[in-house]
Amino acid sequence: MLIIVLIYFLKNNIMLYECKRLKTEEDRQTLRDVKRMIFEGTPFREIVGKYFKWTDNIEMYDNNIAYTNSTCKRVSSKIREMKNITEEYVMGEELICRKYMKVNGKNMNKNYRYEVIGVSDKIIKLKHISKGDVLEVKKEVVRNNFIYAYCYTAHSKQGCSVDGDIVIYDWNKWYVSKNCFFNGTHKKYRL
Image 1 (cartoon, rainbow, N blue to C red):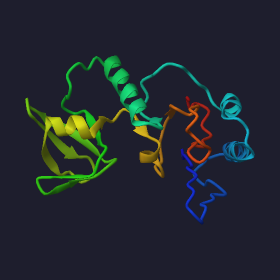
Image 2 (image 1 turned 180 degrees about the horizontal axis):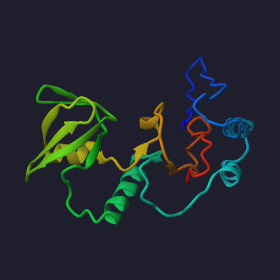
Image 3 (image 1 turned 45 degrees about the vertical axis):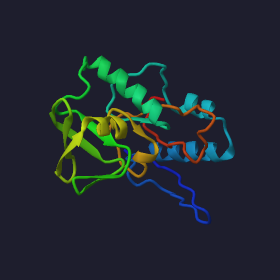
């Protein structure tokens, strides 16, 4: 499954003409139709009503995307509640770094995921998911610079391939333009 993100630079456009990851011609045609409707100015609500399912509920899905960090925090809090997680940090839970920083001489990169592998009163022990680096970070630093990894911002997920259903929050906010709208064809997407 593929999410196509249309990014606009000052003078250059990236235009993807065919998505080779889509398995059927029907899915490729749906993607072309959605893209055409977006750039012809069709209201998002009409596009969503025609091609996607939507719900007003926060549900437990693996792929939650929002435009704002505040929505990510709200969605993550609700999912933690649904999972009956009451502690502030628990072993095995994943966090997303929201600010580049150095801790004990090692880089902690924005939008990278870290697994909680140790919790004490003042220190959280984090393991970088892809590199395996382990860092001890003050709990206050974690509170101020990380979010739970149950929801990502649209910007942090740009260019990623995603398997399974995707729930997109904030799609109907006034500040979300066609340049930020994610195109997709999987009929089970929820918005």
